[in-house]
Amino acid sequence: MGAESMDRIGLRRKPKQERSIQRLDLILAAAAKIIAEKGVSAMRMTELAIAAKVPIGSVYQYFPEKAAIVKALFDQHASAVQTKTAAMFSDVQSLDQALDLVCDIIDWYYDSYHDDPVYLGVWMGTETEQDLLRLNIEHSGRVAGIFHDAVRRLAPDLCDEEMFARTYLFSHLIGAVIRLAAISEETIARRMLGEWKRVIRASLFTEAAPRAV
Image (cartoon, rainbow, N blue to C red; front, side):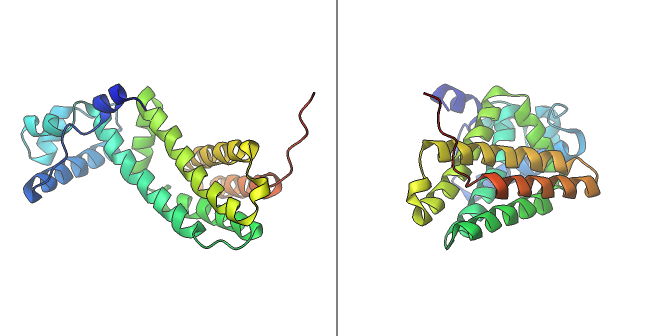
C-alpha cells in the first residue's frame, strides 16, 4: 500500500504515554461497540467521541477519518490470524499434516468469528473502501507466505510461482468462505466449510497442468 494511502487511513500519531494509550483503547472499544450494533456506515465521529467519553479532538488526534478506525480494528483481527497461522505451521512435519492444519485453521477461524459482530462489521467496512480492501488482500498474502514457507521446508520442489499463486488464492478464498459461513445458518455453514475443506485436500498439492505451448 502506498504512503499516501497509509497517511489517509493510518494512525496520525502513536501514543506513548499510558494515559494516551488508554484513551486510544477507549476510542477503539467504543468504535467496536458501535460497529457491532450499527455497522461501519452508520458510525459517526461525533457519536464515537460521546461513546468513548473523550473530546472530538482526541478522536481526530489519532484518526484522520473513519476508515482509519476500521483499519486499526482490522489490523487487530489480521494480527491474531497471522499469529495463529504462524504458530500452527511452525513445526509442521509432512504435507498431509499441512493439509490437516489448513482444515484446523478453517474451523478455528469460523469458531472464533462467526458470532463476532465487530469482525463482521469491520469486514463489511473493508468491502466498501478501496484502501481497506487492499489491506484485506495484503493480509491474505501474508498468511499465504506463512503457509508457503512451511511447505518449502517439506517439499522445496513444489514451491514455484504456481504454488505461491495457488496458496495466495486459497488464503484469500478461505477468508471469503469464512465470512459467508459466518452470516449463514449454522447447519449450512458447517456443510459449506466441509465442502471447502474437501476442495483444499483434493487440489492444494495436485500437480499443475502443463502449460499450452
